[in-house]
Every structure is written in C-alpha cells, then in structure tokens.
Image (cartoon, rainbow, N blue to C red; front, side):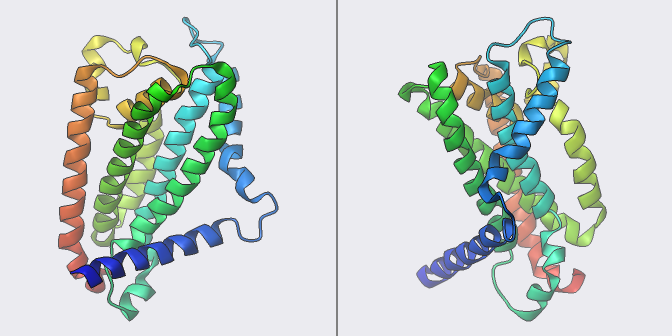
Length: 255
C-alpha cells in the first residue's frame, strides 16, 4: 500500500513538473502572465461595470481582481482537465498507471500558479490595511473549498468526456454563463432573495466571497449560503471520485 501511494505521488509530481516547465517555455515574460491576464480583465470590466453600478463596491478594483484570480484558476483547470484523458490517449495505451494523475497534475500546476499570483496580490493589499492574521482561516478555508470542488468536478467531466465527447463543449459553454452567476463583478447583496437558491447551488459563490472577505474585509457568505455550498462541494467531490474510478477501467476501450 505504501509503495502504491508513494508511486502515485511521485508520478503526480513528475507530471505536474512537466506542466510547469512547458507552460511558459519559449515565452519572454514568463511568470508575468500570472497576473497579466486577470489584470487586463480587471481593467476592462472595471471601466464597463463601474458606470452601471448603483451602489459602488469599496476597493472595487481589488474586489474584481481577487475574484478573477479565483475564477481563472477554476475555469482554466476545468477547461484543460476535461479533455485531458482523450488528449493523453497515446500515454494511456502504452502504460498502466493511475489515470487520475492526468487531470490532477493539470489542477496542481494551475494551483501552484494561483498561489504565486495570490502572493503577488498580497503586496498591494497590504497598503489597503484590509488584510490581517485573523483573516488567514477564511482564506485557507476558501482555498480548500476551491481545490476540492475543482478536483471533484474535473474528475467527473474528464471521465464522462471519454465516453461522451460533447461534455467538453458543454463545459466551455457553461463556463461563460457560470462566470456571471458568480459574485465576481457584482455583490451578492444585489441578488433578489427569491433567486438566491440558484447561488446556493453554485459552490463558487462562497469560495469567491471567502477570498473577498479574507483579503478585502468584504461581506462574508451567510451561514445558509456557506452550508449549501459546502454540501454541494462534498457531493461533487464524492461523485467525481466514484465516477472517475468506475469509468477509468474502460478508458483503454474508449480513447
């Protein structure tokens, strides 16, 4: 058992290292792209949405930026992980190994980039005075929820995509809608109560709110919202793990 676990982690790290090395290979600016994309998104969205906001959000630029960092990690991980098993068909045909390391290595490499971007984000936030040691638990819990939900959903979609290739296209279309169904460019306070159940089905709601709360002292997620989002995350994580384990036995036949 110990050797199998050790082999799994060694293989996972080897594939993650490969992802990290190849991402910025032959690029001039390298790790600058960690913050360049969300920074450009933040500038565009800030100038567009700030004109339509009836109630301005305090430190809106930072509010947007942390939400975009979270979203970019989630959407990029899900987008790349969903077709990953199909894309690695030659590797699957050649060797026997835990298939889960393929999507997990993508998520882990993206998570490392995400953490580095957060560390850079801390520098300007320190000048705001909204970050303190008492906020660390909120940030840490938000990261745990984000990672668990991303892993669970990615395992689910990557497994289903092997059998049903439409899943990849569905995920890409869904992410466009999902972005606006997550409180990144607006505050959850503007959502009418009768529609709030929709946001309770979206685990990314509490993740974004926890990060905004931790870094910017924004409004925290309510108990009902947080409980519903945690429950949804746990369900997705368990279902994703079970479906992937079940479907992985047939990957050789479908890829």
